Image 1 (tube, helix red, strand yellow):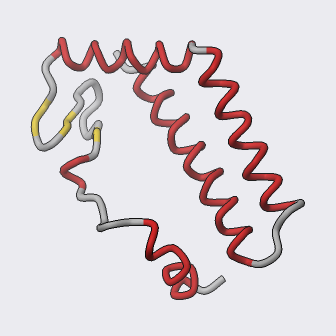
Image 2 (tube, rainbow, N blue to C red):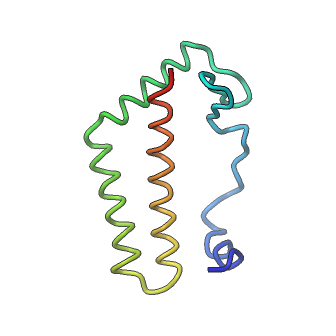
Image 3 (cartoon, rainbow, N blue to C red):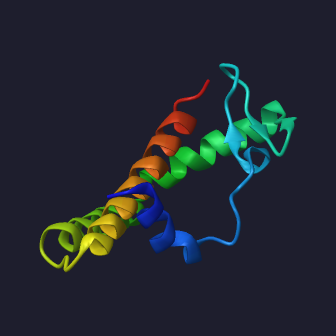
Length: 109
């Protein structure tokens, strides 16, 4: 699928591109930066603790598995066109990004 076609199909999903400033970044091992400032040790430990908690919640696992199933169903069983396939793949990508971020945060020292 061409990039311009994908962009035109998804242009109404977003208000504006997010800026790096708003991302939770880990530029240096052991440090977290959010909105341009290095988080304190207390803030960092709180985020790590919350990431561990989210990963341990059974409902979170159930919901992400259901989302993954619905995305795969959209791609392989219910797709009528390229947009359906792209939508399903975007959903799978979102789940993957979320899980990887939680994994990285929960294993930080």
